[in-house]
Length: 108
Ligand code: SF4
Image 1 (tube, helix red, strand yellow):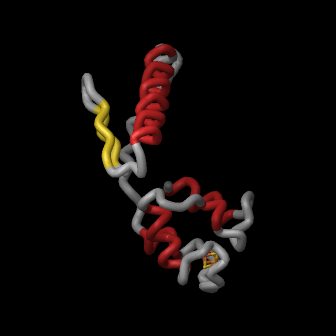
Image 2: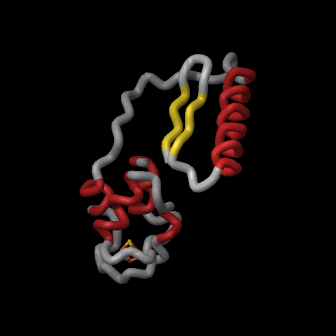
């Protein structure tokens, strides 16, 4: 799926159906309006963000290729994490609250 937010338009494509696309657009509008309402309370962050590399995430995964996440390898899981196609919670081997879980969460 792709979502592009511009000054006056929101464009979506590659959704499985129109209803899902409309729902995502509605949520995006609510999100943006909420930010606008709270703009005076928000402290901007000037830290540069760059998309993490799958190899950097892979370092903190269990690396046992157990396949419990439904993927053949931990590297495949790391790649899908970077692409936002899976959630960290999909790896049952990685304990929430663990140091590695925290480090990966901070990268995403
Ligand atoms: S469930 Fe976790 S440890 Fe197992 S293969 Fe997937 S990412 Fe690796």
